[in-house]
Length: 307
Image (cartoon, rainbow, N blue to C red; front, side, top):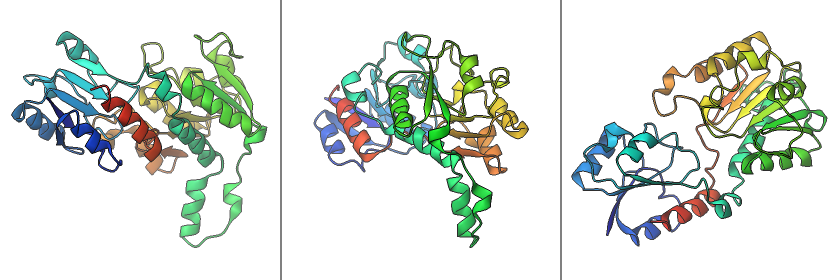
C-alpha cells in the first residue's frame, strides 16, 4: 500500500480525499511548510507525493527529498518548475504530470478564462474603479478604457491554452495575431512583428531555455501601441525588472499576471508585487489559473487514478 503525502489543498473538492484513500494511506499536509513536509516524509516513510504548484511556496528539491523513501511525485499540473527534475532523474524518482494528458487538459479552459479576465480587468481598470467606488467616489473619467472589438491581440504560443484565448478574443470581435514557431498555421512569422502590431500580448508558453525572459526591454522596444501584457504561463517568461521599467516609461500600458518568478521563494522580494503596490498598472493573482472547482476536481481525479 502506498503512503501518500498530500502537500496541496484537496479537502475542498468533493470526493477527492475518499478517492485518495482507495490508493493508499493518506497523510494530509495541505498547507504545511517545507520543513514540516520534510519531517512528514522522513518520519512516515512516505513513498508518494501528491502536489500542485499553485499553493506551493517552496521547490521539491534535494533539501526536501534527500534521505527519504519517495519514489513517485504526482503533480496535478502541466508545468514542472516547482520540482527539481534533474534531482529526480538522477535518483530514480518518477514524476507524473499532465503535460501529455490531452484528453483531460483539452477540457480545461480555466487558465485561459483567467487570462481573458485579466485582460478585461486591465483594459477597463476594473480593480481601480472598484476601489474608487469603495471610497464613495463616482467619477468615470478616470477609468475610460479600451474596447476589445477594436483591438489587435497577439497570442504567443498556439497550444491548448493559446487556442482557447484566441477563440475567446475572436468571439469579442478582436483582430488576432499568433506567434508560435512550432505551428505552421500561425499568421505572424516573428515575435518582433507581433509586438509592433498588437494592443495586447497574451503569453501561453512553457518555460524552456528558449522562452525564459523572452519578453524583455529589447523586444518591447519594438512596440508601437503601448501594449498590455498578460501572463498566465510562468513568471520566468518575462524579465520582471524590464516589465516594471517599461511600464514606468509608458512603453507598455499594463501587466496582468497569475505568476511571478520567485513564487516558490520569498514573494516580498518580487519587483512585480512591489510595483503593483506602488501604483503601477499591474494586476497579480496568486497562481489561480487552474483553480476552479470543476477544473480541479477533473484534474485531481485524473492524477489520482494514475497512482
